[in-house]
Length: 152
Image: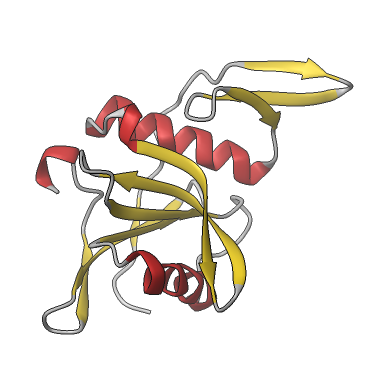
């Protein structure tokens, strides 16, 4: 695996409640409460980070985006769209205890066969990898940090 960048997400106050004995967190993109799993904590924290610290417009982000790949339905954890509703970035999350390994990159690149976005990000809440895809040269470049929205 190429260059690895480590940084942590800034703390965020997630809106939580207990329902039917389960701790739930409010997803600001889907506008509903979901069971708070470790992976969901990463998703919600990362989405807040993108909006509050990187300037990503909330209205251009979507969670759990369905796509069809080889006759099967898959779901991208988060997709960033441009103002013409074209996908620009796929973000894949794993629980904090899951190591970001090659199979995670394989998963996100399979999704990108369908969406063909210029940016891919994977995160487990502690380790974050961002890369820019260069379709003209059939290559990719790992970025030293997650780009601000204005840099895309």
